Length: 227
Image (cartoon, rainbow, N blue to C red; front, side, top):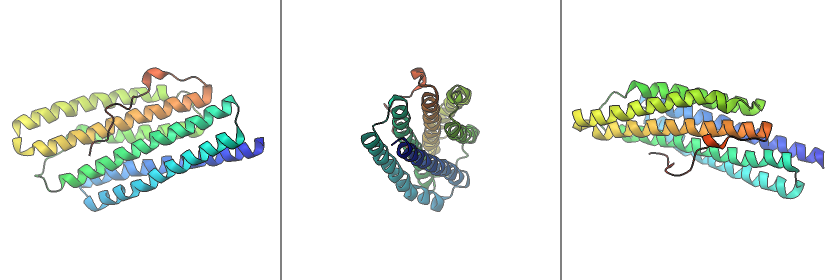
């Protein structure tokens, strides 16, 4: 029985890793389409989001099957339950990537407006955070969330700068109000990617130690991806 359980757990972890890689690629590609103003590529990202959604469904189905058939003990149940939550976090990050791609398409027909430089910095930091979180999950690194905190604080600060830029642009360039607002929504999605990445770090810590610091866990309220 133990051997069967460990095999099922390894399969679950492999699915999580596959989903994490696909989500990481979706974020990268969405930001590539933003940087190059590429609508065709953006539409492909939107179409591929269904694959990420399906992976979450498969993970949930398999995890529940493991729980009902194997009846894992407390520590093992902790791992399986965290895999369920990790699938949810990754699916949400995929939604934010899809939201960015949809905003790229909306910008195509609008007058040209140079995006604030903070967005590119946010994008690079958010991608680096996600890679770090996924590596930490594979290594069962209990310090992941603490290490990610600094980058998250930087992204929050950059988001506030984009917010200030948006209001200033809307006042000084009324012809660019809509595009400026879309840039703000893109920044919002990047900020939320960082928040969800922190959650991955927190859940990784819980898998490794059995202790979770709940003060950093993000709420679902007001968490709809902007698109």
